[in-house]
Image 1 (cartoon, rainbow, N blue to C red):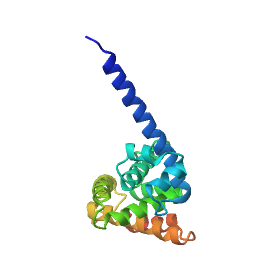
Image 2: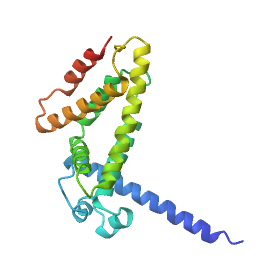
Image 3: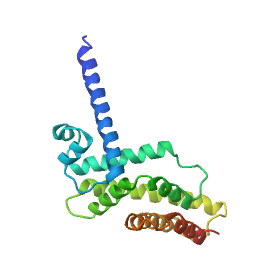
Image 4: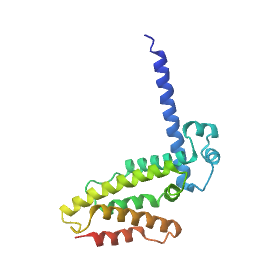
Length: 198
């Protein structure tokens, strides 16, 4: 049996995966500097040095590209600065806010995508952020339960509700910071942590 066609297909697939990753890496750099800025897919291609046809080959729409850029940037960020196993629940969000200070364009991209997810016709963003928020609430609620058992968070707090509040506070503070860099996200999150503390 001739294995050459399978090897050729696998080689083409691997090359496509690498090319897609290169496009995302370059796009992350661009968005980290400028944010989404309402640019078209064609303008994004020009900014990252890729033809419009190449972008359309790897990403069905501008929205899909932006979601994948955000997802890849978040994965890279977590790989470089992993979530500590024993950090406080609000401390995790403070750590994320610290990381985000260096990449305001990606914070803007995140805010733009979340806002778009609320509009009609943005199903990919709605699905992505709906799942992301659900997973993050679950993760934080589990950490809150662990901290409650350790006596670090008040026992009368409902973990799921507290998780949603922490996310809302973090996202809202980042939006305020984008509008006014004098907003001290860390100090505000420290205040929230104090309110939750047992």
